[in-house]
Image (cartoon, rainbow, N blue to C red; front, top):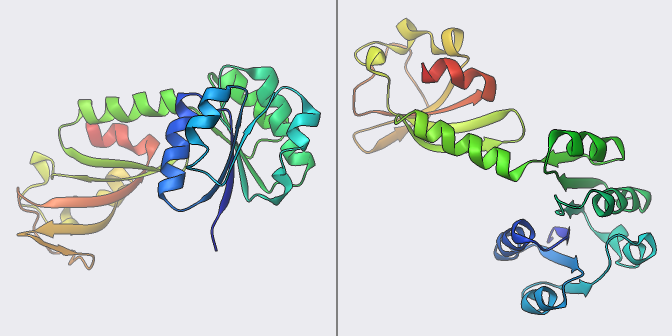
Length: 215
């Protein structure tokens, strides 16, 4: 069964989000007050509506009660974002995600009912900074607000030592989920396995643990 998602606000973030959701097969409803943008995406989504998202009656008329998730993506318009979050929750939407331009805005949106707050620019900057700060990170993905999964080459001081000796979970709060060596990836690790310089480690860690790993 397709997941139904409403994207309220079609700025750059909303447009990128709509593209990805549509490609992923979601049933997408979009709303924005810009008629040209609505026309641009009309053939890509199941429902495209030109709407004044600061008007509670207009928001109630969008049919949000039937969607699984509402994403309020107007990070620069606090009044409209508040109205969309409040009305969506009043209509019984189970999960409402709101984009925020600042921590203060995010706090306000959470107080009026948003289940999750996202800071796209902040998260993008943090991810870019981490990748630039450490050439060891090969891939990096966020898993929610506090976890990430990534792959990396072993630090120089790790090479030639076993997983048992390194005690990576104790020292770095790093949970290894797989190791790739000689083109073969294994999710079953021998604690006495010696790490080679050309190995690739796949791991999960909390964001706060990354600082220790980067040192």
